[in-house]
Length: 247
Image (cartoon, rainbow, N blue to C red; front, side, top):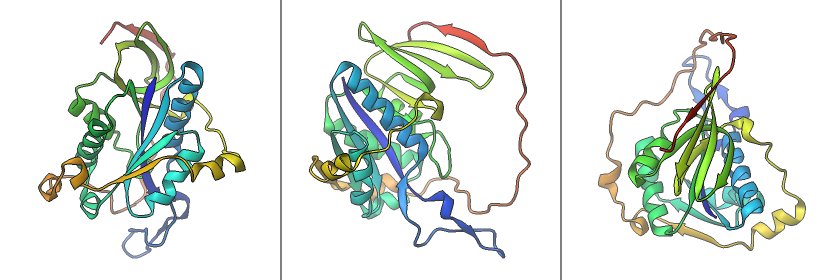
């Protein structure tokens, strides 16, 4: 099974400091890495490959430092990687990011499954996966906590907080995974050293058929003020299992 894992480069959230006067986050100079949910997506792709064969391609969009960050994905089990680096991508919101990822995936060619984390560590909009599936005209299964494959189909259990859904779909498909789906492995020293020798391609906007017009400003919203918010309480309802037929 050929799997593409889309990962997002973020600043290290644990090192963010907040300006006292404006309540704005200070992001300059912070190290860049992949978020926890991205690591879950990569780990699940590697586990699927280990069970049924195939290859795992790590795909990410980010800054020039991405060429270093992507080595974490290669050390974590990806067979090869593609990085999308261009000043135009700095303007990309979830809509622009999904468009760029879709163009890159179309250039990559054959795949059976695309995996993303359920949301990014920084803004957690959860929009990129579903937007990407829509552009590529793929079945989209979100919040997956367990997955299996048989007869050319994917069977996934979705975590809906107070209930579970079991969904079946044809392949190829796209799924987003929760942090509860697995425990990401810690690469060994040998895996870290081998990562530098794995295939890595770098594409700019022009290489995937995009231009400045594709990243014109739209009405996207970015969190810039981190004032305290009241924590929502979860209800303690019983878990319910729902089965949904093929998409």
